[in-house]
Length: 64
Image 1 (cartoon, rainbow, N blue to C red):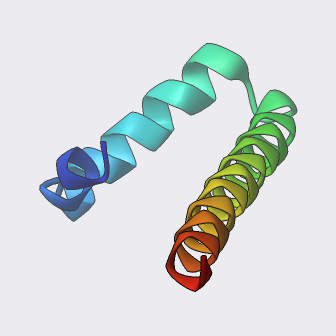
Image 2 (cartoon, helix red, strand yellow):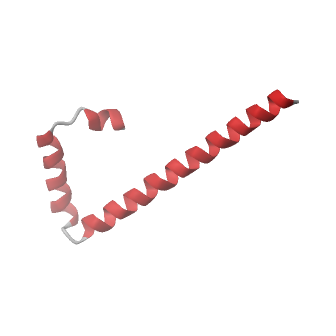
């Protein structure tokens, strides 16, 4: 998904923001952005936890 966002120019991002503003309204956008931020943070935390568990398992496997 991030590769798709990287290929967007300034006008495309502005147009998408304008559509979101029309669709959701000005009062809902900050709430949606906060929810999206929380979701991304939880996803990053979960992936970090899985990565740490894998690394810990690999270290235990080498020690034995």
